[in-house]
Image 1 (spheres, one colour):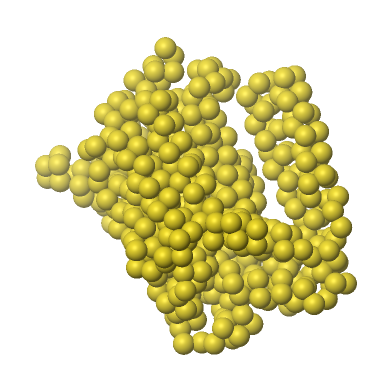
Image 2 (cartoon, rainbow, N blue to C red):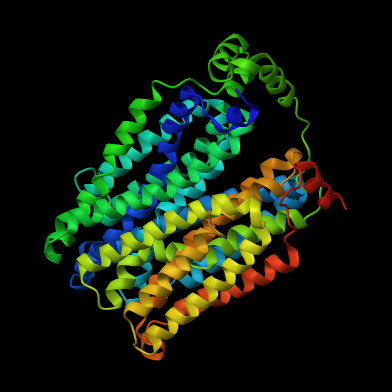
Length: 535
């Protein structure tokens, strides 16, 4: 067999293990996108009843403020840990103290101080946080993923994620029946969504990690890229599931019962994932870490028989790592990593993924039509993600990122003007699809390529700051969209075009950022990229 055919062929056992691991990516996409078909129903079920019952509204608002405060405290604690790792215990503790003081002041004066009365802005805030609450779990899961992978292993970490997916699906579908803590129903729902988010955060790190560690080097890139494809595929699957549940049903049924089936449907892939995980081995790298070299060698002989001994030696050598301060290569690489992640979210992609149904309904589409259009958006996302996989090494990272950012900016500005001028229709759908295609072939997958390349191996742990920043930015965008899009004041002034212009402006800033600060990494070895930061 020629070297070329060996490079292209994938051994059946590797294919099977990769397929199981990518189910974690599929559930990642499924869990984050399932909310898309239920956004309007959640408002009708959870928030509308509060409008006619001031006592219930006041009690619910008190719990909501408590939950949000706890979530902010958790996120602040995680950021504090990053500051200490970056700047050392003394400087990091000072920075953390300042962060906590500012956070407490902001939370009190802008969130806790007001009366517990349901207003339009507070109702929109509750809706936005309810829909985006899973992202708090994503921040937690992503931050703990490294510790979990080291302590209980990659396989059992994925099992934990699958169990969390399963519990979250059941609890989100029946928040009042599985309300063991005696909370308001909406608080119970948020709790189960956060649990699912922790599963997403774990899967987002452990699935590609497991694939990379069981894959031979010559096909590693191809196999790891399947995880990104699986995430988008999971989104497309749930779009079809949501459509099949809602098709032909009255809005009243969807608002009371249909949304439960949407969340509950996740139990099927989650249970399948959990069952299949019992039949796959642990990662050879983790086995070596736990001094189980014989087991690791036996596994390597199955998945890479030609080079098992050499791979084992390389794994053992790679585990001898010196602890290097995260600022050893200066602060620029950290800043670039954070801004890559923040801009990936600030261009508004998750508004499209989470709120597409609301957007299409605001264009005048019925419920069935809006779900069909959402499916089209998902398919475009899937197709152009594949395009990115085959073009990123041909055209380079910077051209794709700059062109993609500019195309997204133009599409968002155009979509905003279509709302402002009240000219929604086929052209608006085209703007939405153009935006999605531009993101899918640029900032979607290429951001992850750049993040995996720009951080030198000795400070690879600093990538966790960028990943956490991405989830935090995602939370901010997803939470604030209903607050802008459903604001009576902004709607009177801009006819729902305002938020899209904000995302368009972010697209222009993202293009400028790439042109000015991002080095082209195409064709460079990791050592050559590392030398850029040394200079």
